[in-house]
Length: 451
Image 1 (cartoon, rainbow, N blue to C red):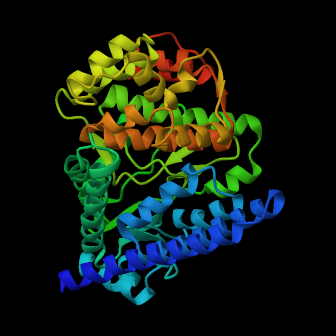
Image 2: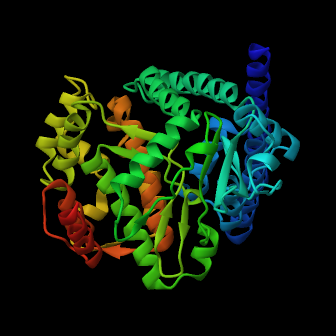
């Protein structure tokens, strides 16, 4: 049965690929003989139709593929707005499971139907995402809560998706990314996504982060209700706040600035000081107040540094942003496995390529924009461009894959918010014990002094 489900899911992926491959061929034919605005209009129409198709298919499939679509929805800035909006539905508006199925899951996990567990239970979910959907409820002692219920069969779907991903990465390593450790990379993703399927682990992580950020001046995390949480049901404090779409449409420049810097500092504190960080930074996992305060949701995909792991990766980051030294970078990358011995690459060529996502930290003040994210991503994936030789010989150590996801995800969020800040000085607060560079940095330092 599991093998049959795997093949059915794989077939859907290939049908989606073939359908859009055929659409691309037709699109290229239609472009012939057209110039200027007409060609641009055809390109935009193709992008929109393809994005709508991908969003519809992945939204129904859930699992790891839907997560991939969520990432695309706010990182791929080269897409037209309508195409991004189609993919953005994957952030919180996927097709939900039927109310009876959600109630059945609650009954199996908690021993009684939701109408008996909770004082009030809303059958229609308020959000449906890649692993589970969220219902609003009221506990028997009168507390408003959010109840996340896992989709039946989603574990098998994720295993199937990751099997397909490994085959895809192996194909890539055979022709282009020859230095990539495909198995190691997918094994790291598999471990993290298996963690995400266990809501008891997520409850532990969220409780840990609640304690770590207790009393923090600009980070809020909802508390977990252990009495109504199990391996496949997670109940947390309800947060009355704006979604990403609402905040992005209405926020003032000051609120956008505060929210963006708060999200950035939350990640830096987690990575550099806690040794554990949320590896899923997409807009559906944040809630906002009108003045830019942020509540952080969803701690299913948490990466924890194993002993010595961050100490191996950090020298490469420091060589880029602290020392800005190509020779030091080469040495650090060879030691951790980003480059194999005897690669023959010029240090400056490597530095020019790998520093692309870190451009904001190489100058005193920088404004993140959607254009920056678009151009930086284009540089990184341009396998036939000026950095082709570097790309061919680079490897991504498995321990770096989740951090890389965070770097790109947060950069995309900051680009949408157009946040300006002294990013270099701010990063040095975490990497080199530098003084606070902004008022939020000062507030965090004051909080640290009390903890």
